[in-house]
Length: 108
Image 1 (cartoon, rainbow, N blue to C red):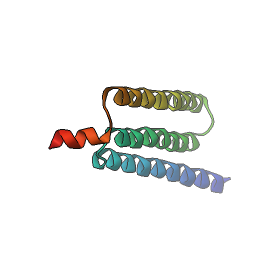
Image 2 (tube, helix red, strand yellow; image 1 turned 90 degrees about the horizontal axis):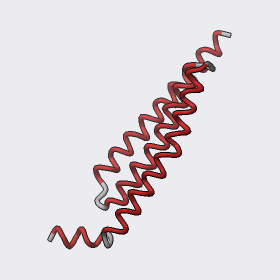
Image 3 (tube, rainbow, N blue to C red; image 1 turned 180 degrees about the horizontal axis):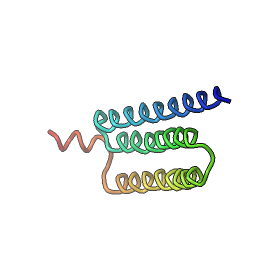
């Protein structure tokens, strides 16, 4: 049964590292992309996938108990709220600005 504990530990750590890599790519995308919709897409997708990997890794490391159930509820809440908020921010950006060319004209 000792091998199962090692396997659970390594799988949980792999998911945590995957979550950190996704967050790193998200941060690079937010700082390097020019247009606000591209930055918002990088942030929204990175948050959803990064949080999913990170909380999944924590659930595997923790085992099955009440804390895992709470993490599942947090994960479900974040999976619903992050895309909805990104959609609303994108809708606001589209309705108030004309597009990516507007920013290039303002810089000149």
